[in-house]
Length: 184
Image 1 (tube, rainbow, N blue to C red):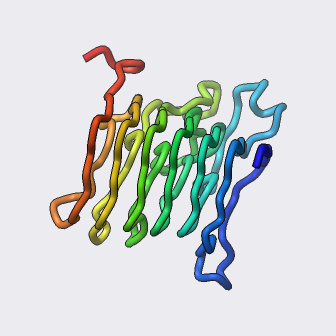
Image 2: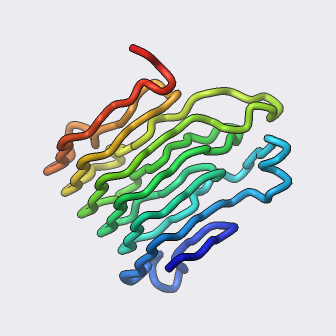
């Protein structure tokens, strides 16, 4: 509770990358240093995410200056959180929240502000855009995900990827699609 983490939060391989019901409340996660932020020159060459693993709850989390906010694991709940200011890395697919590779099942994404635009405009080779604010990829399928009462804003091509044609019980309810980066 009430903590600031400079770095990333990941579950260990010995637990099969399972947080085993870790709950974060009122936590800020930031991967960049203060000097990198001040210089607006954060380049992440390794991709990655601020929070990565199964069975985690994140309530009122502030996640920013990271390559991807959250790599959604199975059985996770992200609620009342704000994710923004993703950093750019060559070949990376940024998102505020992303799921794929057979992870993200049985999860809830509720009442969040998910904002994805590449932040570091001074980076060499900089390109604007993200995959989406919420990327529920169909690699191979995704099942039982509730996406409710969120605000999506992105400089990417799509606000969200919805889990693909093979996904089951993926529900989008009462979400808003913002116009922060694109007025249409």
